[in-house]
Every structure is written in C-alpha cells, then in structure tokens.
Picture 1 (cartoon, rainbow, N blue to C red):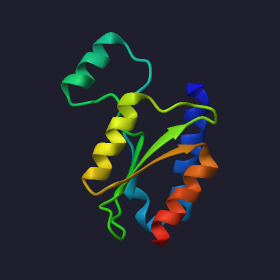
Picture 2: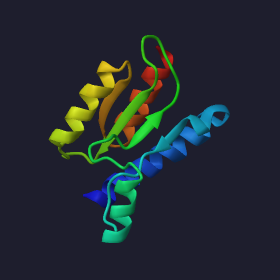
Picture 3: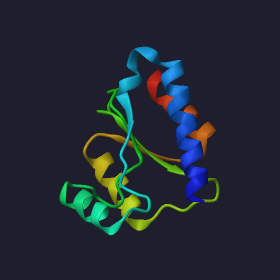
Amino acid sequence: MRDHEHIEQSMLIKWFRFQYPQIYKCLWAIPNGGLRKITTAIRLKQEGALAGVSDLFLMIPKGEFHGMFIEMKAPGGKLQPNQKEFQLLAKSMGYEAVTCYGYEEAKESIKKYLQS
C-alpha cells in the first residue's frame, strides 16, 4: 500500500512541476512517514518530525487560506487519528487541509484550490 502512495505522490509532483513551472518550488513533500533505521527515525524526531503531519504542503495563499496541506492516500487507504487531528489544527490556523485518494483526486484538489 505504501508503494502505491509513493507512486501516486510522485506522479502528482511530476504533474505539478510540468503544469506550473513558475511556482514549482511552492509544492513540496514533508517526509514524516516511511520505514527508516531506528537511528535515522530518532534523529528526525529530534529535528522536529511529527507523526500525523500531512504529506505535502502547497505554499500559495488563496482566498481565506494561507496555503494547503495534502494528505495522500492510496485508493482504499484510511486516515489515521493523528492525521485527522493535524488537519483540524491546520484548518483552525487558516490553512486548507485535504485528503486525496490517488493522483487524480490530488490533481483536481490543487487545480480547484488554485482557481479559488
């Protein structure tokens, strides 16, 4: 399942960079998940990595929002409680926060957000 999310997110980044070359640096990954050696996981936690933080951040304010967090899920994936909690916090701070089940849904969410 994790591999599927990787492929979908990679496709999204590739699409965004091609579609929006002038602002491609405004969408980036937040690598909080994944399997790592325990020493790497400890170092990342010490540096501020937090479980539940969304996978991607779009640093473009639109309308009432300061930017948009995107949680990528494979089709059939499930949002974890700490991910729901993070999205609620982000929204309370003036950010859009969405869960997207696959590349197509994420692409449409970004296009809709940028058109607002």
